[in-house]
Length: 117
Image (cartoon, rainbow, N blue to C red; front, side, top):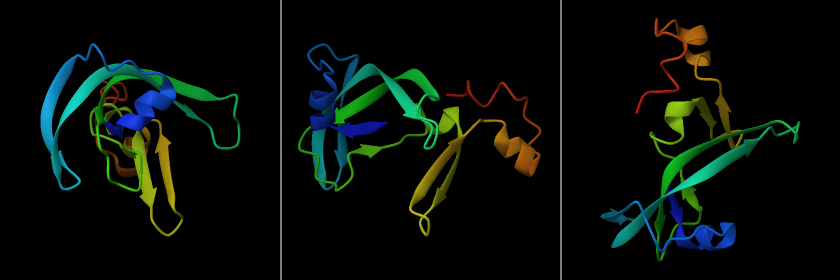
């Protein structure tokens, strides 16, 4: 998962002692990205008291140029949920990991989807 460095500032995330610093190319630039462990949380769109949260590493990118503040990664987000994207609805819908098996019969044990990666 990657985010603009201003997101770290807004959330009060300290980047002074990163877990790792990786030089990556993103958005037409090459830059050093500081990775720190943070708590991520999602609220249900119609039931605000319902919330799911987890800890994961996020890389904060200085000089972020994109119009969106975050890139959701395979590790730290997609490996925790079944994710449905719809451009026509302008919507991203994360659901329980076992939903994909219910829909498509992948044959994976229900608890393995949330622990991969």
